[in-house]
Amino acid sequence: MSGRRSRSRQSSGTTRISEDQINDLVIKLQQLLPELRDSHRSDKVSAARVLQDTCNYIRNLHREVDDLSERLSELLANSDTAQAALLRSLLTQ
Amino acid sequence: MASADKPINTDVPEKDVFTLHFLQSLSNLRRQNTFNSPEKTNDRVKKIKKAAYVSMARAAGGTNRLWSRALLRRAAKENSKVVRFPRRKKRVTCLRRRRSNRRDPVEEEEAERLRNLVPGGGGMETSKLMEETAHYIKCLSMQVKVMQCLVDGLAPK
Image (cartoon, rainbow over all chains, first blue to last red; front, side):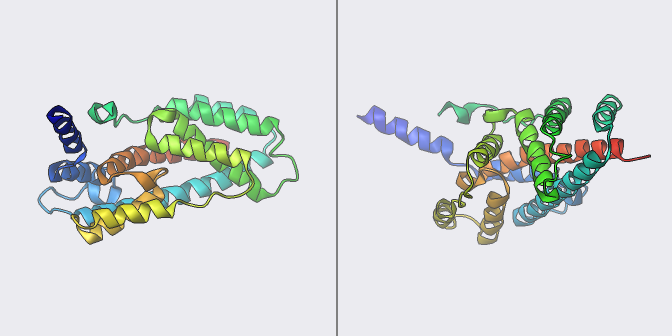
């Protein structure tokens, strides 16, 4: 019985995340954001700020996908040789 | 679960794999005459957009990632339904209430917004959410780059 108890305690210990781990993840996220990537290590950016900028960045990317889908739709509807052009752009990438 | 022991995989997804999937979907759409039919432009754009996201999820490892799994599942549901599935807000709010005790409330609020932006984010712990978000961002920006490449390649010179 005591064995079971200790096991359950152990498993709950692994799911709890330490502040250090969160901080590491925040820094990792920060490095992916164009606006915050270049900020110096010395001026610490708050986790809330990083999360906020992450949201904005994702929204921007979603908007870009929307715009690009629209443009692709136009281009594919208008060109007769879209298939060939697609292949060409694939090969020259 | 053993998944907690797995090392965090932050590999940048294969650009070529995404491109291949995406081009394949586009040529499928073309074969179905999506681009020539009198279909509404809006529907066409939606199909292309969906093709892009599904291709990204496949390239990102399909069902191995939480966000890509959620995205693919949502896409599959959309294929078989007409009704929109409501978002599972309930679960999110109950998670928030439980967590707000021990974390910065502003931080939690932002994390909450993030949960609504990342596919499948609704049920994630904050640490998992951030890990998945990092991967999702990498994939998204790769997707945008490739799509931009295609647009540039297709645009009349």
